Amino acid sequence: MKRWSTMSTFLLAVLMAAPGMAQNAPPASGDSDTPAARAERVRERFATADADHDGRLSRTEAQSMPFIARNFDAIDANHDGYVTKDELRDARMERRAAKAQKAGGQGQPGNPSQPPAAPGSGA
Image 1 (cartoon, rainbow, N blue to C red):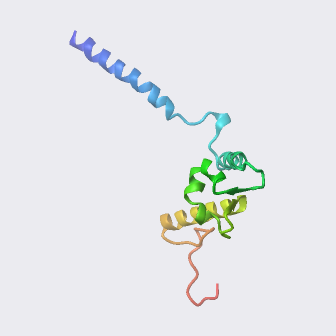
Image 2 (image 1 turned 30 degrees about the vertical axis):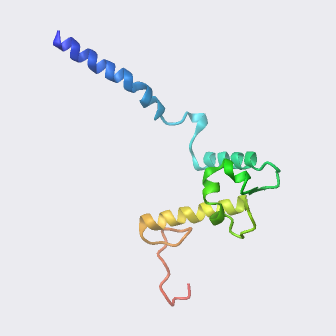
């Protein structure tokens, strides 16, 4: 009888955990999480947030995109009060380069595999 109780407890635990495990499943093939797919989602969200369709986000329009809203001043490179797709792309590339440099401890932005130029080398 004790054996049956232990087995039923185990099965109950597995069944209860199954829905949580399904939530961590990789995306379906049509919903890939490739860099291209993520970039497309950002483009779509940018277009949706751009209420006046001028190709840039005001501080108010950016409120629907939390990352942009939190980092608006840093992303708005020319400080004109708007974030453009180019500014967003440049900020993303700078962020990636900083992460790569931090992870590797060296390298040049945009090319983390290249060691930093020696001082005075003119490079």
